[in-house]
Amino acid sequence: MHTRTATLPAAADGLRYPFDTPPKPDEAIEVAPGLMWVRLTLPFRLNHVNIYLLADGDGWAMVDTGIGNEATIAAWTALFEGPLKGFKITKLIVTHAHPDHVGLAGWIVERFNCPLHMSQVEYLQAAYHQHRGSPERKLAQRLFFRRHGMNEEITEALLGRGMDYLARVSILPASYSRLSKNDEITIGARKFRVITGGGHALDQVMLYCAADNIFLSADQVLSKISPNVSVWAVEPDANSLGEYLTSLAELSGLLPDDVLVLPGHGVPFYGVKTRIKQLADHHEERCQLIADACRTSPKTSAELVPVVFHKHVLDAHQTGFAAGELIAHVNHMLAHGRLKSNVGADGVLRFTAT
Image 1 (cartoon, rainbow, N blue to C red):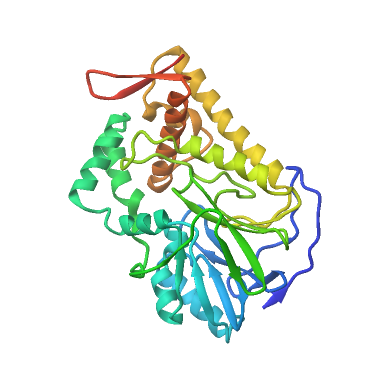
Image 2: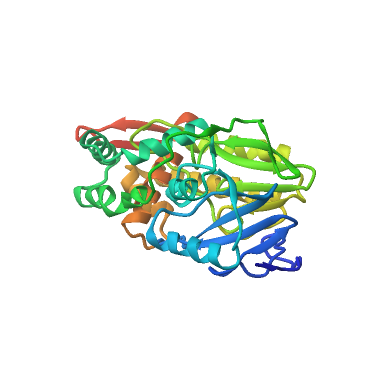
């Protein structure tokens, strides 16, 4: 276990970063009294996830778990036999149902016999993910991608390796304790307000301790990247981007700019209001790209993916996220009258700027 002295180097992006480097796989960093930061590896382009441990009486509350694979089990085993030796997990808080956050919930709960805390929607979504591979659901996904102009090759890639990450979870615990918006949860000497928000996930849990000026932002506000905001076949007309932008506006009004932000990926930072504006501006830039492309001729979502993601070389996993995110922008623009849609004789949606 290590403690690092906070420094505040100037950054070109307007944010301030109190820790020069993240923890190595075999260490834990104290970012505040009784608050530890652990980083676990992921087998994707986004190659890590942050886990936080908060002092809680005679043990520690864990926020998120890492993905459900043997490598993550080995990493946790090494930590509990090394820098976290003697740590007892008193409660597990999972912010949302994505496998890099909920993936080892069953393993942690079984090992420490501790309760699981999640929002109701995210618990049910995690259960849904575990059963998403039925023939009926795969058919719905196939039709969804085809409706947005994805060809057979891309569709099959998305339904195969591109969705494989959803399977990387241990068996979800059979019961949980519900966290709801504006609940207060006590962890040790700290009291946290539960904040929930949509867009990246349906009802993602964030924790804010006003007394100590600490905000665990999960994946809603990240320091270096924009969290994925997507639409999928299960709710094809959702306005996920609208939900996300609404959440950002609420957070900007609630949080002081000098709060210490502890995100699910990237590094801790100060300057949450600046970062929220950057994220909102980023999505508006993508909407402008889509509008410009759809002024010249009607475009399918498949045709718009390279317009928005022209700087990226995408594998099947990344293409799935890119397609979902593109459709989220299209749906948001439809909701605000910035695009209109038409279904062609081939059954494919095409979009024109208004």
